[in-house]
Image 1 (spheres, helix red, strand yellow):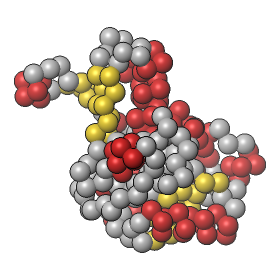
Image 2 (image 1 turned 30 degrees about the vertical axis):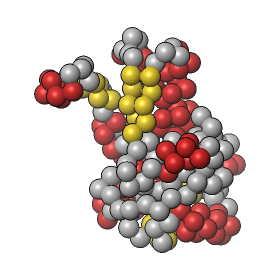
Image 3 (image 1 turned 90 degrees about the vertical axis):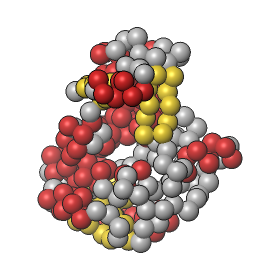
Image 4 (image 1 turned 135 degrees about the horizontal axis):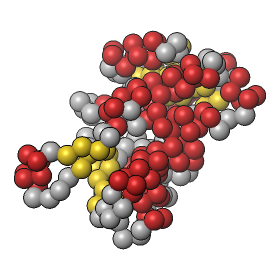
Amino acid sequence: PVMTSETINRLVGAEVFFKCENFQKIGAFKMRGAASAALRLSATERARGLATHSSGNHAQAVARAARELGVPAYIVMPSTAPAVKRAAVEGYGAEIITCEPTLQAREETLDAVVQRTGAVFIHPYDNERIIAGQGTIGLEILEDFPRVDTVVVPLSGGGLIAGIALALKTADPKVRVVGGSMEVAPAMYHSIQATKPVEIEEKDSLADALLGGIGLDNQYTFPL
């Protein structure tokens, strides 16, 4: 649903609408991308199971998608992942493999898991099908507000903003899309400034879902 608040409207001096993805399955937009990616796999690929690395929301989404498809899920999660999100992933029947809280550790542990299980890796953000799934938010925004002028999107790895921007700007190039990064984890911001993907040192944050960097081998979200 889309909701609004008179109090916030008065505070910012504009009409603000919130696309409430917290009401989505697993409590976050990540379910869109995970479903998009998982449903586009062949029957043979699905049978191998699904694997990913994530601090929580994408982990839950892939675990739930695997449960719905009746296949195993193998989720690499950093040691700092919130207990409530680990419990949710386990609740969907996935196997959790813990690693150190760095992007390098996630990727190396994920590689070992894929070699051991043969599961298909569904990247948290740098995946065309993930981007397409997140882009459905942009399509729904246009359905509800065809004359929208500015959309502000949380920005971490870039899957969400890439999908939303593609949907919105394909329909109307004049729509302004603004990415909001945390000061403690502005990997995409610094990458854009450097004109290439870069790694930065991140600090812990209450907004743990925005941690994780963008990866030096980023193929899709950084160019978009």
